[in-house]
Figure 1 (cartoon, rainbow, N blue to C red):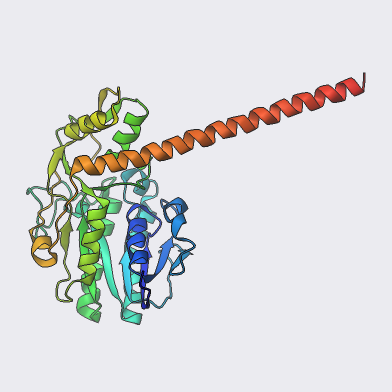
Figure 2 (cartoon, rainbow, N blue to C red):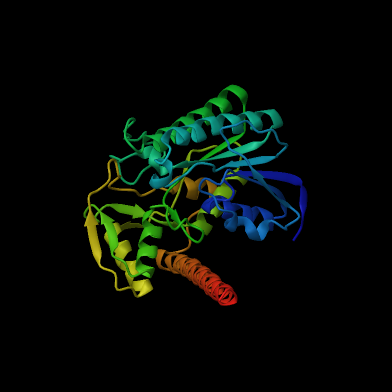
Amino acid sequence: MKYHSNKRVLVTGGAGFLGSHLCDRMVDKGYEVLCLDNFFTGNKRNIQHLLLKPNFELIRHDLTQPLFLEVDEIYNLACPASPIHYQHNPVKTVKTSVLGAIHMLGLAKRVNAKILQASTSEIYGNPEIHPQKESYWGNVNTIGPRSCYDEGKRCAETLFFDYHRQNRVNIRVIRIFNTYGPRMHPNDGRVVSNFIVQALLNRDITIYGAGTQTRSFCYVDDLVDGMIRMMDGPDEFIGPVNLGNPNEFTILQLAKKVIELTDAASQLVFRQLPVDDPLQRQPDIRLAKEKLDWQPRIQLENGLQKTIDYFKSILSEFRQRKTQSKEKVFEKKSFNQRYYRTRWCLFC
Protein backbone atom coordinates (compact mmCIF):
# COMPACT_ATOMS: atom_id res chain seq x y z
CA MET A 1 0.00 0.00 0.00
CA LYS A 2 1.39 3.39 -0.99
CA TYR A 3 1.05 5.93 1.82
CA HIS A 4 -0.11 9.36 0.59
CA SER A 5 0.98 11.41 3.58
CA ASN A 6 0.14 14.63 1.69
CA LYS A 7 -3.62 13.97 1.68
CA ARG A 8 -5.73 14.18 4.85
CA VAL A 9 -9.37 13.12 4.65
CA LEU A 10 -12.02 13.80 7.30
CA VAL A 11 -15.05 11.49 7.41
CA THR A 12 -17.80 12.73 9.74
CA GLY A 13 -20.06 9.92 10.94
CA GLY A 14 -17.10 7.68 10.15
CA ALA A 15 -18.05 4.92 12.61
CA GLY A 16 -21.50 4.50 11.10
CA PHE A 17 -22.68 2.10 8.42
CA LEU A 18 -21.67 4.12 5.35
CA GLY A 19 -18.87 6.04 7.03
CA SER A 20 -16.97 2.96 8.15
CA HIS A 21 -16.98 1.49 4.63
CA LEU A 22 -15.74 4.82 3.28
CA CYS A 23 -12.99 4.88 5.94
CA ASP A 24 -11.93 1.40 4.82
CA ARG A 25 -11.56 2.58 1.25
CA MET A 26 -9.69 5.76 2.19
CA VAL A 27 -7.28 3.86 4.46
CA ASP A 28 -6.64 1.31 1.69
CA LYS A 29 -5.82 4.18 -0.66
CA GLY A 30 -3.11 5.24 1.78
CA TYR A 31 -4.67 8.57 2.76
CA GLU A 32 -4.41 9.92 6.29
CA VAL A 33 -7.95 9.38 7.54
CA LEU A 34 -9.60 11.25 10.41
CA CYS A 35 -12.78 9.48 11.49
CA LEU A 36 -15.16 11.67 13.50
CA ASP A 37 -18.21 10.30 15.34
CA ASN A 38 -20.24 10.97 18.50
CA PHE A 39 -21.39 7.32 18.60
CA PHE A 40 -25.10 8.07 18.79
CA THR A 41 -25.71 5.54 16.01
CA GLY A 42 -22.10 4.77 15.06
CA ASN A 43 -20.33 1.78 16.58
CA LYS A 44 -16.67 1.28 17.46
CA ARG A 45 -17.02 -2.28 16.24
CA ASN A 46 -17.34 -0.91 12.69
CA ILE A 47 -13.89 0.69 12.73
CA GLN A 48 -12.13 -1.47 15.35
CA HIS A 49 -10.01 -3.17 12.67
CA LEU A 50 -8.67 0.25 11.61
CA LEU A 51 -7.56 1.53 15.02
CA LEU A 52 -3.98 0.20 14.76
CA LYS A 53 -3.48 1.46 11.20
CA PRO A 54 -0.82 4.20 11.11
CA ASN A 55 -2.90 6.37 8.77
CA PHE A 56 -6.16 6.20 10.75
CA GLU A 57 -7.26 8.36 13.67
CA LEU A 58 -10.53 8.29 15.62
CA ILE A 59 -11.98 11.51 17.01
CA ARG A 60 -14.98 11.50 19.35
CA HIS A 61 -16.86 14.72 18.67
CA ASP A 62 -20.41 16.01 18.22
CA LEU A 63 -20.75 17.94 14.96
CA THR A 64 -23.18 20.42 16.49
CA GLN A 65 -20.01 21.91 18.08
CA PRO A 66 -17.25 23.64 16.05
CA LEU A 67 -14.15 21.72 15.05
CA PHE A 68 -10.71 22.96 14.00
CA LEU A 69 -8.51 20.66 11.89
CA GLU A 70 -6.19 20.76 8.89
CA VAL A 71 -7.64 18.58 6.12
CA ASP A 72 -7.76 18.38 2.32
CA GLU A 73 -11.12 16.68 1.86
CA ILE A 74 -14.26 16.36 3.98
CA TYR A 75 -16.97 13.72 3.56
CA ASN A 76 -19.89 14.99 5.64
CA LEU A 77 -21.94 11.90 6.51
CA ALA A 78 -22.84 12.68 10.14
CA CYS A 79 -26.57 12.34 10.82
CA PRO A 80 -28.83 9.49 11.98
CA ALA A 81 -30.44 8.10 8.83
CA SER A 82 -33.16 5.73 10.01
CA PRO A 83 -36.60 6.93 11.19
CA ILE A 84 -36.25 5.20 14.59
CA HIS A 85 -33.00 7.02 15.29
CA TYR A 86 -33.68 10.45 13.80
CA GLN A 87 -37.15 10.65 15.38
CA HIS A 88 -35.71 9.79 18.81
CA ASN A 89 -34.48 13.39 19.14
CA PRO A 90 -35.83 15.39 16.19
CA VAL A 91 -34.39 18.72 17.36
CA LYS A 92 -30.91 17.19 17.62
CA THR A 93 -31.39 15.68 14.15
CA VAL A 94 -32.06 19.12 12.64
CA LYS A 95 -29.09 20.58 14.54
CA THR A 96 -26.80 17.83 13.27
CA SER A 97 -27.80 18.49 9.66
CA VAL A 98 -27.82 22.30 9.82
CA LEU A 99 -25.14 23.18 12.39
CA GLY A 100 -23.03 20.28 11.18
CA ALA A 101 -23.16 21.67 7.64
CA ILE A 102 -22.31 25.18 8.87
CA HIS A 103 -19.34 23.96 10.91
CA MET A 104 -17.96 21.72 8.16
CA LEU A 105 -18.44 24.37 5.46
CA GLY A 106 -16.70 26.88 7.72
CA LEU A 107 -13.82 24.45 8.13
CA ALA A 108 -13.65 23.82 4.37
CA LYS A 109 -13.61 27.58 3.75
CA ARG A 110 -10.79 28.19 6.29
CA VAL A 111 -8.48 25.43 5.03
CA ASN A 112 -9.55 25.47 1.37
CA ALA A 113 -10.73 21.85 1.44
CA LYS A 114 -13.08 20.04 -0.91
CA ILE A 115 -16.26 18.98 0.88
CA LEU A 116 -18.93 16.43 -0.03
CA GLN A 117 -22.40 16.48 1.48
CA ALA A 118 -24.20 13.14 1.87
CA SER A 119 -27.75 14.29 1.16
CA THR A 120 -30.66 11.93 0.70
CA SER A 121 -33.49 10.83 -1.58
CA GLU A 122 -35.78 11.85 1.31
CA ILE A 123 -35.53 15.44 0.09
CA TYR A 124 -37.95 14.36 -2.67
CA GLY A 125 -40.55 13.41 -0.05
CA ASN A 126 -43.47 11.35 -1.36
CA PRO A 127 -42.66 12.05 -5.02
CA GLU A 128 -45.19 13.02 -7.65
CA ILE A 129 -42.82 12.13 -10.50
CA HIS A 130 -41.25 8.75 -11.11
CA PRO A 131 -38.35 8.02 -11.26
CA GLN A 132 -36.92 10.99 -9.38
CA LYS A 133 -34.62 13.38 -11.27
CA GLU A 134 -32.26 15.85 -9.62
CA SER A 135 -34.31 18.70 -11.13
CA TYR A 136 -37.41 17.64 -9.13
CA TRP A 137 -38.02 19.93 -6.14
CA GLY A 138 -39.90 17.38 -4.08
CA ASN A 139 -43.20 16.90 -2.25
CA VAL A 140 -42.24 17.17 1.40
CA ASN A 141 -44.30 17.68 4.55
CA THR A 142 -42.54 20.40 6.57
CA ILE A 143 -44.26 19.59 9.88
CA GLY A 144 -44.54 15.79 9.94
CA PRO A 145 -42.62 13.28 12.10
CA ARG A 146 -40.06 12.72 9.32
CA SER A 147 -39.55 16.44 8.66
CA CYS A 148 -36.61 16.77 11.06
CA TYR A 149 -34.54 14.61 8.72
CA ASP A 150 -36.01 15.64 5.37
CA GLU A 151 -35.95 19.39 6.01
CA GLY A 152 -32.60 19.26 7.81
CA LYS A 153 -31.03 17.70 4.72
CA ARG A 154 -32.78 20.15 2.40
CA CYS A 155 -31.47 23.08 4.44
CA ALA A 156 -27.97 21.56 4.39
CA GLU A 157 -28.08 21.48 0.59
CA THR A 158 -29.07 25.16 0.60
CA LEU A 159 -26.12 26.00 2.84
CA PHE A 160 -23.70 24.09 0.61
CA PHE A 161 -24.76 25.93 -2.52
CA ASP A 162 -24.78 29.32 -0.76
CA TYR A 163 -21.26 28.75 0.61
CA HIS A 164 -20.22 27.83 -2.92
CA ARG A 165 -21.76 30.91 -4.50
CA GLN A 166 -20.80 33.37 -1.77
CA ASN A 167 -17.43 32.01 -0.59
CA ARG A 168 -16.30 29.82 -3.51
CA VAL A 169 -16.14 26.71 -1.33
CA ASN A 170 -15.38 23.62 -3.45
CA ILE A 171 -18.50 21.52 -2.80
CA ARG A 172 -20.03 18.23 -3.95
CA VAL A 173 -23.63 17.16 -3.19
CA ILE A 174 -24.91 13.60 -3.60
CA ARG A 175 -28.42 12.31 -2.92
CA ILE A 176 -28.26 8.79 -1.53
CA PHE A 177 -31.08 6.34 -2.19
CA ASN A 178 -31.74 3.22 -0.07
CA THR A 179 -28.40 1.58 0.66
CA TYR A 180 -27.78 -1.70 2.46
CA GLY A 181 -24.96 -4.07 3.37
CA PRO A 182 -22.80 -5.31 6.24
CA ARG A 183 -22.57 -3.09 9.36
CA MET A 184 -26.16 -1.91 9.17
CA HIS A 185 -27.49 -1.43 12.68
CA PRO A 186 -29.72 -4.44 13.50
CA ASN A 187 -32.25 -2.20 15.27
CA ASP A 188 -32.28 0.76 12.89
CA GLY A 189 -35.83 0.04 11.67
CA ARG A 190 -34.87 0.08 7.99
CA VAL A 191 -36.57 -2.44 5.79
CA VAL A 192 -33.57 -4.58 4.73
CA SER A 193 -32.13 -4.99 8.23
CA ASN A 194 -35.63 -5.49 9.71
CA PHE A 195 -36.51 -8.27 7.29
CA ILE A 196 -33.16 -10.06 7.60
CA VAL A 197 -33.11 -10.03 11.42
CA GLN A 198 -36.74 -11.18 11.62
CA ALA A 199 -36.12 -13.97 9.11
CA LEU A 200 -32.94 -15.20 10.84
CA LEU A 201 -34.85 -15.37 14.12
CA ASN A 202 -37.80 -17.08 12.38
CA ARG A 203 -40.09 -14.28 13.46
CA ASP A 204 -42.94 -12.90 11.39
CA ILE A 205 -41.88 -10.41 8.71
CA THR A 206 -43.54 -7.06 9.44
CA ILE A 207 -44.76 -5.20 6.36
CA TYR A 208 -46.15 -1.69 6.71
CA GLY A 209 -49.00 -0.97 4.35
CA ALA A 210 -49.94 -3.45 1.61
CA GLY A 211 -46.32 -4.03 0.62
CA THR A 212 -46.93 -2.59 -2.84
CA GLN A 213 -44.78 0.49 -2.16
CA THR A 214 -41.50 0.35 -4.05
CA ARG A 215 -37.86 0.92 -3.18
CA SER A 216 -34.54 0.68 -5.03
CA PHE A 217 -31.72 -0.94 -3.06
CA CYS A 218 -28.05 -0.09 -3.64
CA TYR A 219 -25.28 -2.23 -2.14
CA VAL A 220 -22.86 -0.27 0.03
CA ASP A 221 -19.74 -0.97 -2.08
CA ASP A 222 -21.40 0.53 -5.16
CA LEU A 223 -22.47 3.58 -3.17
CA VAL A 224 -18.96 4.18 -1.82
CA ASP A 225 -17.60 3.94 -5.39
CA GLY A 226 -20.01 6.70 -6.41
CA MET A 227 -19.06 8.92 -3.47
CA ILE A 228 -15.36 8.69 -4.30
CA ARG A 229 -15.95 9.30 -8.00
CA MET A 230 -17.94 12.42 -7.11
CA MET A 231 -15.21 13.75 -4.81
CA ASP A 232 -12.50 13.04 -7.40
CA GLY A 233 -14.55 14.41 -10.29
CA PRO A 234 -14.15 17.75 -12.07
CA ASP A 235 -14.64 20.88 -9.94
CA GLU A 236 -17.27 22.23 -12.32
CA PHE A 237 -19.61 19.33 -11.51
CA ILE A 238 -20.85 19.95 -7.98
CA GLY A 239 -24.22 18.18 -8.18
CA PRO A 240 -26.63 17.42 -6.78
CA VAL A 241 -26.44 13.92 -8.23
CA ASN A 242 -28.52 10.84 -7.45
CA LEU A 243 -26.60 7.77 -6.28
CA GLY A 244 -28.66 4.60 -6.01
CA ASN A 245 -29.72 1.46 -7.82
CA PRO A 246 -32.45 2.12 -10.41
CA ASN A 247 -33.80 -1.46 -10.19
CA GLU A 248 -37.15 -1.12 -8.44
CA PHE A 249 -38.74 -3.73 -6.14
CA THR A 250 -41.90 -3.82 -4.08
CA ILE A 251 -41.57 -4.38 -0.35
CA LEU A 252 -43.41 -7.69 -0.79
CA GLN A 253 -40.82 -8.83 -3.35
CA LEU A 254 -38.02 -7.95 -0.95
CA ALA A 255 -39.66 -9.83 1.93
CA LYS A 256 -40.14 -12.98 -0.16
CA LYS A 257 -36.54 -12.82 -1.42
CA VAL A 258 -35.18 -12.53 2.15
CA ILE A 259 -37.30 -15.51 3.27
CA GLU A 260 -36.01 -17.51 0.30
CA LEU A 261 -32.34 -16.69 0.93
CA THR A 262 -32.53 -17.35 4.68
CA ASP A 263 -34.73 -20.45 4.33
CA ALA A 264 -36.86 -18.99 7.12
CA ALA A 265 -40.25 -20.21 8.34
CA SER A 266 -41.41 -16.61 8.79
CA GLN A 267 -44.92 -15.48 7.88
CA LEU A 268 -45.87 -12.06 6.49
CA VAL A 269 -47.85 -9.78 8.81
CA PHE A 270 -49.21 -6.39 7.79
CA ARG A 271 -49.31 -3.19 9.84
CA GLN A 272 -50.53 0.36 9.21
CA LEU A 273 -48.33 2.46 6.94
CA PRO A 274 -46.38 5.15 8.89
CA VAL A 275 -47.12 8.84 8.33
CA ASP A 276 -45.43 10.34 5.24
CA ASP A 277 -43.84 7.04 4.21
CA PRO A 278 -43.15 7.45 0.45
CA LEU A 279 -45.02 5.08 -1.88
CA GLN A 280 -42.37 5.10 -4.61
CA ARG A 281 -38.63 5.55 -4.58
CA GLN A 282 -36.48 5.06 -7.68
CA PRO A 283 -33.49 7.16 -8.76
CA ASP A 284 -32.91 8.50 -12.22
CA ILE A 285 -29.11 8.01 -12.45
CA ARG A 286 -28.49 9.27 -15.99
CA LEU A 287 -26.52 12.22 -14.62
CA ALA A 288 -24.22 9.93 -12.57
CA LYS A 289 -23.63 7.75 -15.63
CA GLU A 290 -22.83 10.75 -17.83
CA LYS A 291 -20.71 12.82 -15.44
CA LEU A 292 -19.12 10.17 -13.21
CA ASP A 293 -19.19 7.08 -15.43
CA TRP A 294 -20.87 5.36 -12.47
CA GLN A 295 -23.63 2.82 -12.11
CA PRO A 296 -24.30 0.03 -9.58
CA ARG A 297 -22.86 -3.39 -10.39
CA ILE A 298 -23.99 -5.62 -7.51
CA GLN A 299 -27.43 -7.15 -7.98
CA LEU A 300 -29.94 -7.37 -5.13
CA GLU A 301 -29.67 -11.13 -4.55
CA ASN A 302 -25.86 -11.05 -4.30
CA GLY A 303 -25.90 -8.02 -2.01
CA LEU A 304 -28.61 -9.51 0.20
CA GLN A 305 -26.61 -12.73 0.60
CA LYS A 306 -23.55 -10.79 1.79
CA THR A 307 -25.72 -8.80 4.19
CA ILE A 308 -27.43 -11.94 5.49
CA ASP A 309 -24.02 -13.56 6.11
CA TYR A 310 -23.01 -10.50 8.14
CA PHE A 311 -26.14 -10.58 10.29
CA LYS A 312 -25.70 -14.32 10.81
CA SER A 313 -22.22 -13.67 12.18
CA ILE A 314 -23.27 -10.94 14.62
CA LEU A 315 -26.33 -12.88 15.81
CA SER A 316 -24.12 -15.94 16.37
CA GLU A 317 -21.63 -13.82 18.30
CA PHE A 318 -24.47 -12.30 20.36
CA ARG A 319 -25.82 -15.75 21.25
CA GLN A 320 -22.32 -16.92 22.19
CA ARG A 321 -21.76 -13.95 24.47
CA LYS A 322 -25.21 -14.43 26.01
CA THR A 323 -24.40 -18.10 26.72
CA GLN A 324 -21.03 -17.18 28.23
CA SER A 325 -22.73 -14.55 30.39
CA LYS A 326 -25.26 -17.11 31.65
CA GLU A 327 -22.44 -19.58 32.38
CA LYS A 328 -20.61 -16.95 34.43
CA VAL A 329 -23.77 -16.20 36.41
CA PHE A 330 -24.29 -19.93 37.00
CA GLU A 331 -20.65 -20.37 38.10
CA LYS A 332 -20.99 -17.42 40.49
CA LYS A 333 -24.22 -18.81 41.96
CA SER A 334 -22.67 -22.26 42.28
CA PHE A 335 -19.59 -20.83 44.01
CA ASN A 336 -21.75 -18.80 46.41
CA GLN A 337 -23.84 -21.87 47.27
CA ARG A 338 -20.71 -23.95 47.96
CA TYR A 339 -19.11 -21.11 49.94
CA TYR A 340 -22.11 -20.51 52.20
CA ARG A 341 -22.66 -24.27 52.71
CA THR A 342 -19.03 -24.54 53.84
CA ARG A 343 -19.39 -21.59 56.21
CA TRP A 344 -22.57 -23.11 57.66
CA CYS A 345 -20.79 -26.41 58.26
CA LEU A 346 -17.91 -24.62 59.99
CA PHE A 347 -20.31 -23.04 62.41
CA CYS A 348 -22.16 -26.32 63.15
